[in-house]
Length: 387
Image 1 (cartoon, helix red, strand yellow):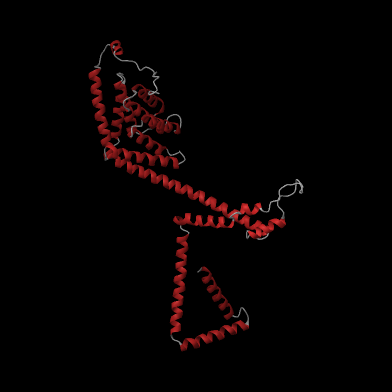
Image 2: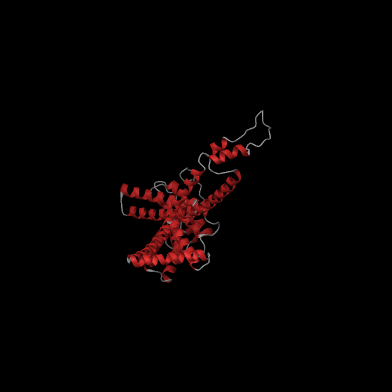
């Protein structure tokens, strides 16, 4: 179609040039005679004018259709097809090239000098012509063009591959979220299957990011907890911690918080001392001062809960810090959902503080207070499960 349009346009341009006398008087005379014949033909056949108009409309429509086809043919969603076609064309051109070239090689032998060239023009040219590459010099230029085209196609494919991987990773994240939400509404084996599907999708998203997407990795850990895979979940959250910047970091703090939660809640072998040790490091050395108040409140509340279960009197201090952080959230007048979370958290903290006051009523005798307050001992559990 493109060739037909090009020939038509070239013919029109040639006719115009001849009509204007650019190509000489003889061509001008010939064009004028042709136009006179056409006018006489048009007078004899009235439908000729209509046919000309229809032809003009048809050519316009065909040109527009070809432009639309070209845009569709080379559209992004068809790019993989174009790459496949390019690869097949190259494969056809270079098919069996190794075998063909092998017929032209002249290896060292007793009747050849040891340092002789292994390919010579005469024999190689025969092979190149058989492969339809022409003579050596022509083949050399053609092959360089092919190599340049391949380099450009490979660059294009690398960029396109990255785009596809990012898109696939995002699709996996969304699909995993849908599966996790489905699991939340089901029970038993159906819920487990949905949780397992969500974990698989999040794991795919993480791998597609070349193991750099902390968000996807965090979701993998949460799904492992849902499935009761506490050992792998701890490893996942430790990997998440290692990916975070050193020092005070909210990302690293969350990873430690998740580890402490696993140690606190995993059944039947929970490890409150290890959870307390992690939370103490988190509060003292990792949690940044500019962390969201709700994040601080939840971490302090969790630390107070763990300390209370260990009969540590300083659980009250952790709950006081959580109380202060929840009140700070409410003072900033957050949205309805956030306000409800903070209000419920504050109610839990107030109840916990009342229980602490009942268990350890205020006592003016400091020595007596120390006597009933077990110190926080370093963690020395050598059991495999604790490790």
